[in-house]
Image (cartoon, rainbow, N blue to C red; front, top):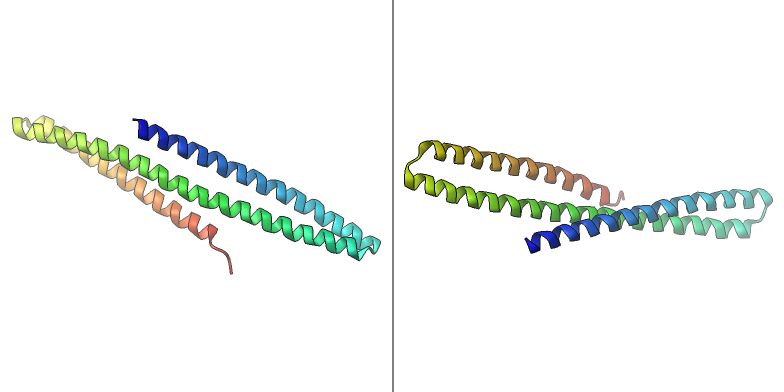
Length: 150
C-alpha cells in the first residue's frame, strides 16, 4: 500500500503543478493584452521607440505563455501515464486474486464458484480494455496538442 500511496501523492502533486503552470500562462496572456494596449497607445502618440519596446514585451510574454502551456501539457501526459500505471497495478492484483480463486475452484470442482470467478475475471479484462482505449485516445490527443504547428 505504501507504493500506491506514494504514486497517488505524486500524481496529485503533478496535477497541482500543471494547474499552476496553466495559471501562469493565463497571467502571461493578461499581461500580453495589457502590453498590446500600450503598443497601440504609443503608436497613436507617435512614440515608436516605446511602441517597439512594448511590442518586444508582447512577443516575450506570448513565448512565455506558450512555454507554460507546453510544460503543462507534458505534465498532463505524465500524470495520465502514472494514473494508468496505478490502475494497471490494481487490476494486476485483482487478476492475481481471481486466478488463485479460480485455481481453488478447479481443485474442489465447485462449478458455481468457478463460473462466478470466471465472470469476475472477464469483467476485469473488459475494464482493463476500456481503460486502455481511453488512455490511448487521451495520449493521442495530448501529444497532438503538444506538437508544434510548424
